[in-house]
Image 1 (cartoon, rainbow, N blue to C red):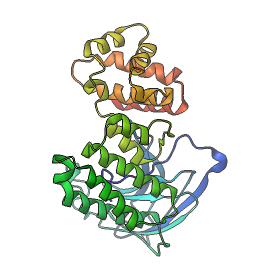
Image 2: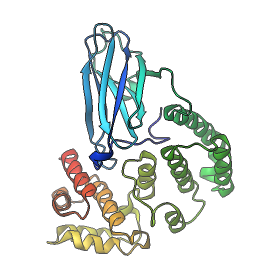
Image 3: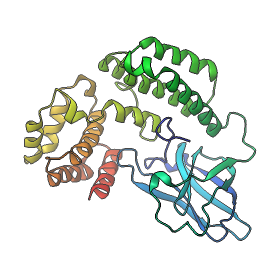
Image 4: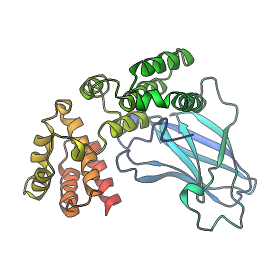
Length: 324
């Protein structure tokens, strides 16, 4: 399962408890008796701060059971030692899984480069029809093949008919799927393809996918689209001058000035979207040489305490913890 190609939902930190449901994961993990298995996710999709949702010890019979309460479909991963297996969890469902492929005892504690760590193999036993993990895996294979076959026309020729062909084919392959998360994935994966192909202008794309649309903080594909659309936005956009950004960050009131500056972009008329773009932009500025990191952290602290939206106050706090 490739997190960078298709997206999944993560556990929302903004859920209403009254709508939460208990999800249970039971299973077996070969050659893992006595080891700890944890269920992990991201606190948010701007900071990507990892958090443990549940944890237990694998029994002598190699079985385990985990439970969590949530109200959104979430992207998570099961982890044993340094190895991971990704899974998408829908609220209130039960998953019986088999984990295999654990590293041998002699190399489990050795230092291994992250890209060399083999993933755990995860199989869902007796999956129900149209189970979301299976649908996403099917889409992943289709998308990989489509990109491989059409890379030249997408990237080099900027052929918008290729995007139109993708839409026709994807909806013919996945017709009438009654799963809101999956259908949202198809929508925003198409949006990412439009950005790659530059098949339409930025404002036109924003009109279809961003302006007047709900911000889906939990949905990995939406947030991948958001990140791709606003990649290095404050640095790369011709609307903003680096010297002006540095001056605002040094000023006594950087928040209102930055929000006013961002309002020059007609895409950012909505205050909520504008503040989220500011958070993403501050992260980009922090890792850009030449910007005063203390000034950036000070502004993040202001948003953590005074931001207009609960989600953004939480994200600011996670960014501060990740960057310090």
